[in-house]
Amino acid sequence: MSSLWKFLVEYETHLIFAASVILSVSAAVHIALTKRDVRAAIAWVGVVIFSPFLGPVLYFVVGINRIRQTRIKSHRDRLIKEGADHASVTVSDLTRHAGPQCVSLKKASDTVTRFPLCGGNEILPLNGGDQAYPAMLNTIDSALESILLQTYIFDNDIVGHRFADSLIAAYERGVRVRVLIDSIGVRYSHPTIVHRLREHGVTVELFETNAVTWRMPYANMRCHRKIMIVDGARAFAGGMNIREEFLTEITRDSTARDIHFHVQGPIVAQLLVIFCHDWLFSTGEKLKMDDWLAPQSPLMPADMAARCVPSGPDREIESTHKLLLAACAVAQTHIRIQSPYFLPDQVLIGALTTAARRGVQVDIVIPGRNNLRLIQYAMMAQLDQVIETGCRVWKGAGNFDHSKLMTVDDSWSLVGSSNWDSRSLRLNFEIDIEVYDRRLAGWISETIDNEIAHGERVTLESLRSQGLLATLRNKLIWLASPYL
Image (cartoon, one colour):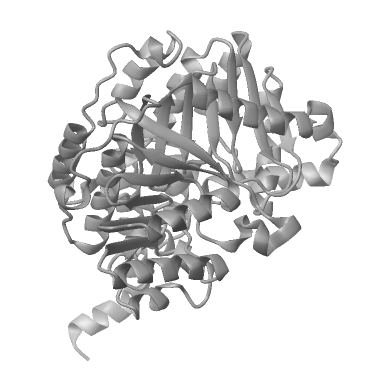
């Protein structure tokens, strides 16, 4: 037996202990230097210190944000510049579209997104799958040049087959088609829809990948964006996935609800930038804007002022979070929020409660029935923090509502894919659209007010009446809410 082997055998325990200390300390130092959220930092330090070997490995897999260091930043910057050039319809008088308080909100938004606010847009709400899916399918069927589709969930069900068949038919008649699906969302159905599309020649790629390849460190990050762009001129965006649960024809009395949006105008170029960047990240293929965008983006008579607000664990980290804070700060009369997963952090809770203390009426609508029971329990655990300062919280009636809506003072709206939770606002790649337009804000306000009229108000008394065991259950689940 060699002297080295004898040394290893004799001091095996000491070497293992030294290795665990080196790994844990190295991970703790990295956490202290890179993490911005003190709660996340403390939690990760606890994991790596009290779980030798396993803790540092877990941190390496899901705790380090490598996406900020991507090597494709220069291409993204070029794409954003091209998108800004195409969306160059400036808004000279914002008060023509929204209230005067929105001028300061625009200034704040200018600092969190590099897309310009542009006029000449039309953003029309589509109520549920009964309106959204036929509109999207008809647009695919009428496509002449190109279709770009990005989604989180693309189920292999009846609705998924309809979309797949339309995409395949478009490809077979010579339309260029690209489909990008999140690698986690695509597995909501088994087998996935990918094979059906690929066997007919449609180009389909997955955002990120599964946990057994070199992209394992990205496994905790998801692309939650939903974008469809047809012929570079018409687009759809919002929070609706492609699955049959949103179609009354199939699910009847149990149909889930959501609001999606049909988008036209210069802002389509901004949506295209987002897709091109995500496609490059996932595939390495560079899509040229001019090859996929209509030669001239038509100015729509509605002339809505709008811009995209992308967010994700890269250079846009917390963009939407910062915008929500700014919107709460400028509100003067009314904030309306509808979210299926309402789990804001303490900073956002502080913004909402401060607005309520200033005399702003704050209405928050959550689902009466949630598709994720653990999320519902966690939400109930912290509602008292907003209710006790004057915010009003309502449980919607009827089936699960997946809508993600916000308005301020009937002048400004935020629509898109983001939820009010840590996953959406820090970990996921999301896309939202801020709209300065009284008409759309009015429609969203009426929609939320209708939910309030038929909903059930959540009060401190109703929370206390849940009982000790239910309250304890909710609080314990709430502790894990950043990871749900």
